[in-house]
Image 1: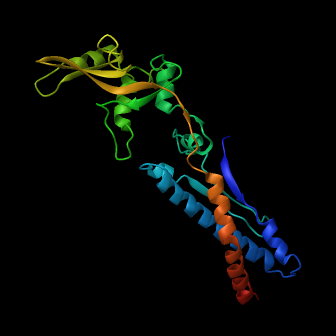
Image 2: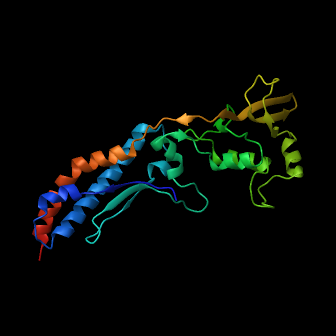
Length: 254
């Protein structure tokens, strides 16, 4: 299991009140820890907006909190390492940005690698003819078309994989649309970049447009200091949150 988290540990701060004997102390401490954890989560989300260019809602909402209670005075703020259905856990695309290192392959890149389309040591970037969403990523619908065409879906007999007949039909132009096919290569005797290209068929001839370009994978420098943001927020916020929670606990004590 992959996990990125920072625990709100306030043992040092609690030394100030070590001699206080009060049944409200665990309640006030847990309340302060949880409120501080909420502020840590908020600051992490703010940092993501500052660091990343047009982060998707998926990345923007990637934080979670495991709250403390009176028996366990520790809260955890982390990046989700689980997903719904077949989605990619949020922690995976953030690992290189937090810790540095080589970018992990996206799921569709792994599928293309598994069938020998994407060479080892390479990743993809959108080509000029790629359909881009508002966050600067290739649209999922176009990626599905590519995977289908190259029969990269892993399930045997999966109906989304193209057949020879569907490929032939796609390549045939009509009065209302161009015919299209896809190929892997570097057109122009290698003068164009290696990647996945779309060939267009029309009454005027054929043309090729780049959909995905293959580039060598590089190492990322860390740009998102998750731990610093968390610890800095705890240092600034916990004491005032504890004072507020302690006063609240005393007012509501029975």
